Image 1 (cartoon, rainbow, N blue to C red):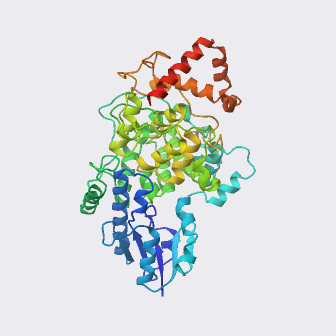
Image 2: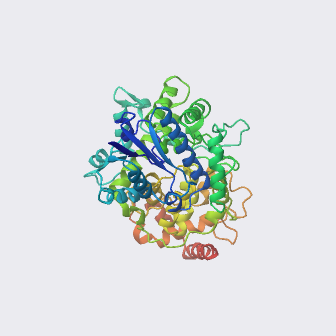
Image 3: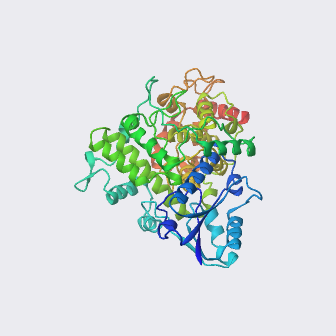
Length: 506
């Protein structure tokens, strides 16, 4: 009797624990494109195509390595509705002694799989996903007893554990963090690098045709499709980023420009999150570029921090807080998500740019997410769970374990400050400073309360006013509230009135 090994769509790594311990011939490998995984949120069509194509290519690699693969395609007859059905069919067709899998990345699937042993009548072995640098147990040991779970201190431990950018037990350059050097606005440049694209092969073209036929009304543009779907092509994309863009990534990582979707960003997160690239190896490649004098320290440190800092930290928070974390709503925000988050049809130039780009590319960088779409939702009082589901749906790299803490915690402060020390609320001045979006916008970023004033301006102060009972005691907001208190009542009421007009128009 053999084992049956289930491999999920974000587990496309040859070193996956459930694959690593078995020799060819010891097990059959089951992979399935199931409708349930395309429907629990309204996924971007590029995301569906990306995962299906990457799965099919990975199955081919496994077969070339001598593995036996049972593959359930989305368009086969009869279709496979969910993962449990795929397992049921495989167990019925074969003689298996165990079902083995690597733990899924989401509570939704983890809770479902907890009942599989009883359901299927065979032993179910769920192995820890050790493709992460920090295990769930290690994160809990770090977190236990701490009053505040700040990413910066977690990140320092990850630096020490991995040895990345360390010299004699101290951080390279004498500092852990070079964020103060990474906030320069960018200007248009004809020679700005672009992420390396991959021409779709026959497998990917078949998947694109499938997605187009089965999801004609799905969100986002399906073509052109230029994402890598194999490990080899993802490695080429990494090589290209290291050679062409890493050196300027640090300076301009917070910048935003009209017509420039990528600037100096790597666009590698989707490849890391489904297993085509190893996160620690990616960081080592970046560190090598610094040590060889090919990229400055501020760029490499900022890049590495996103991977061994924010990425690992978000996963730790997600699993520590449990499945109800996505329902946290500390500020009791209940306004529905505006339709323009799906259509991109709004006169606010910054939101139109970020959402329009998202529709086209299934991608926006972290400041577009945090300080444009995220900040607007925060100060407008949008239901954080609705925003969470939107982020999960529209971005190619979004998986709940990494997306939910960034949305519920960092972006929306819906966890009450567990993850972030203050809400990321801002007026239009921040966007004007870090982008060229405001030029030519229907709204005037310099106008505070007039009928054509930037909506961010009045919503910012209205947000602080209506949440004063919860936020006034936040030490980082003390100076802001003192500014509010110094305003005369006529000015404060003008902000409130303009905010009401903006919110009513939504």
